[in-house]
Length: 269
Image 1 (cartoon, rainbow, N blue to C red):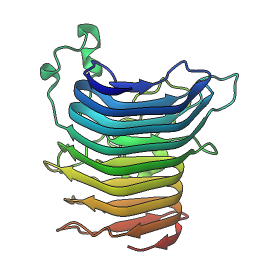
Image 2: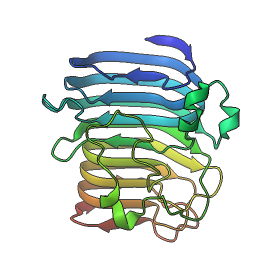
Image 3: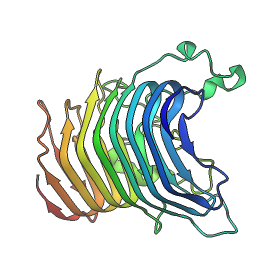
Image 4: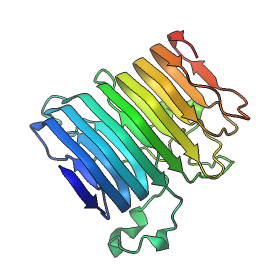
């Protein structure tokens, strides 16, 4: 797939669901995604099979509610958990503005209440079944920001265990509720590389830019966050073998990196 201009009332570039065999050796490049109400890029494997050797590059995203959603779930209760590995997403620019629901008037009327803007990009596997070997390279994402104060329905960094696994749920980027990071959230993953990755928020957002929970072999190389809120910029829980380099703290950061749980073998920044 290449040289396409796409808009959608749901997801623009989506693999899954009900994909019992999976997707292998797929290349998508030179895309323009605009005016999309859920995710720009959604790779979803929840019914078994394999997601492997997928490359997505040179994508411009404007006016979308979520940039990237990578999900390994287990909706097929009578079958095995699938395998999600070897995915590269590169050369992406994405604008995720704070759009009002009335501005998304192309969404089907009965479903319009399901539109949720400013959904955090995420990579999520399952306990014991991580998403493996994902490289995110040369990517810039700008978010609108949800404000400087947490609300009652927001997940906090001190209660990451309260974020539901949603193992058998239909996969959608907002399935976990308001996540505790504004930029990127990773859980149950192994071999995740952020290379020349920039996160920017255009208004206030109190949350960390990046949270990793139960992640092994994490690389942050030229990971740039251009603003900071009240909480640590990066929060690592149960992260093993992390390397952070060429990644300075943003101006005004109260705390750059905070660790908890069984986080060990951290090199850098």
